[in-house]
Image (tube, rainbow over all chains, first blue to last red; front, side, top):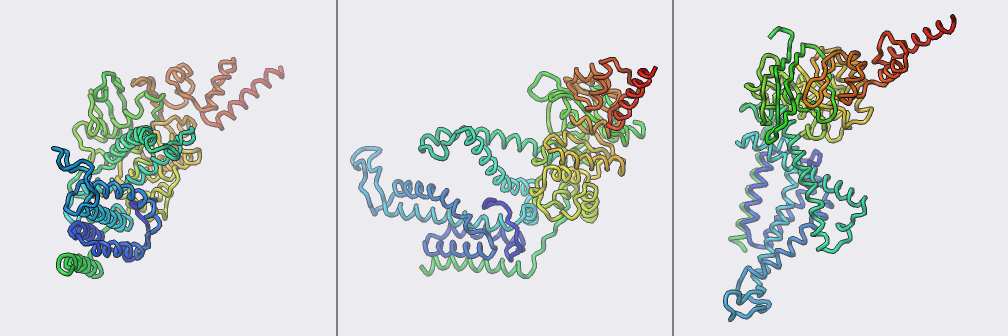
Length: 267
Length: 292
């Protein structure tokens, strides 16, 4: 189980038309990148979390991902505070301004620090938003939604299958690591970071080779099932926008506009 | 092409791209409607390549050099699209994992016919029918990932059957399954032959099952056909078996051993009850000799 894989359920969110969910993803992604106010992004993040619980998605799963993200956020914040620039200097430059070319580097600015936090919060909100769609929509319905929105089936199917491959790769990673542990290789658990860096090829090489072989076999299997051969294609599932779907779509739009107004007009 | 020849292979040679060695050499073969053909040979003998030639994956999807001609139900595989060929020759692969792509069993079965633009009503009917054939009734809404290996492989068979092919090609469908899974899959294959008179080509090492079901065995070695004959003729030919690294059914091994030991065997066994008969005969003969 991962944050991407379909998580069966029968909540309002599960029943929502996939097109509405795709619209939600697109609209909210745009809003998240448009707004700059911490309060607004914080509100959006809170909304996403509320939606999570309304879709009965396992919130605790988010912890492991936050751990992953946390190191990324630290790097982002450090880099932004060093290189973003700005006038409010928190830490004086390591190299004096007088030195040509590299002069002034090493200073930490307030603007950079704030921007680093902003990007981190945006990313966090996005990462929380994605599972809301992927975990509540079976892949074939997601693909069908994309097709009904005008995407070609081949592209829609490839995109959604890629999402589906992530859990497979995660499982594969665990298998390789277990096999390594069984042979007394525990660097990934108790090694220093440079030892881990050195050890990564032993994990990545078999993973990539395995994935490529798997993709090749899958290609043959899909060919044998006539994938992408005819322009017209039938679908045994039908999706239909009902009143609840339209209302939800309207609510999403209202919410997005409200967030923008709050950010650019009120605050 | 005469009416009941379904697959005709004429002087087929093939090599993969960027290689010099031909993995299939001058293959000539005719398979009739309703026949059950087993393809045997050691790993690397060309079984998978031959299977992929029969349903057009070679040369439509995999490049390489093809000489000769493969005709399936009147279609030349070199000039026909995979979509057309998929409706004639369905293919089940070795690994049950890589051939299932969807999150629900009914969608898995529908995937092929949907791609072929079959009407929805037809597809829904074939979902019902194929699930009955592979004995997975009532599984429509379950995710394929929750199935056992044997069930997955049966689902793969159902997904191919839903495209209504005239011949079913199975490339080592049980090599990654446990004995129970193997039994389940062969149970379905037997039903397909006996109840539905399906033409079947199967690459496999399972000689016990071949002895029971196959009309003919095709022995491949190093890309060439060594023999193409009935199972009992193949399994009693010890030189051939050794050359192609094929293990015959255990009862045939016993019979071959007894023959080497100087026993005279009239009817060569490939099945267990035949072996029981053989042992009875030998014992009877022995008693007769002892009695004199």
